[in-house]
Image (cartoon, rainbow, N blue to C red; front, side, top):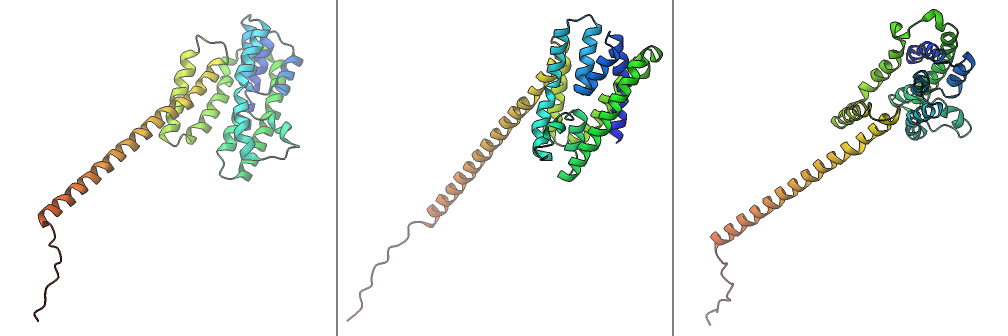
Length: 252
């Protein structure tokens, strides 16, 4: 509920931004109802507000929304929902529902977290989008309110405790470098997708370290075996050859 309320209030900022970019109240509300992925919505209206081509703006929003497909691959295994409800549940596969679900210890808790987060966020996001679009002129500059920072702040707060291992932290660090470094050079949404390369990069480095460690251990074991054989040879040399057993002739 806390995540749904905190991020849902960001719909105010989207409604104001959308109305300021020239979209009608109906168009703004339809974006929240049918798209329902805040980053893609902000990317779309931001590009339109900057005078961008509608098709280019839509392409950028699409690329940014592709990340939800990767969340879906993981959540489909974790939640194991009935086939009848999967198409509806897919509409709620976003950053926040994925983060809350993956943080739960059991499947039941993950389903509850996904449902409560998705429902509360969907209702509040759409309600505040409507209010923001209607009261755009009265609200004024959203930067003063800081509402656009609520969503990323909550997501980072959910993500940070999940970075338990050195590999997890390395992936996060490389993804940040790739995403921010490529931001000035690639279209909106593309840096987020490119930052996914952090996973194979870190896994490749970890794999090399693991193979190097195994080779070192194997070399150490061979060295130990050679030393043992050398010591055994030295012991045999000190003992000398064993005298053969010669049968003794008995006196008549």
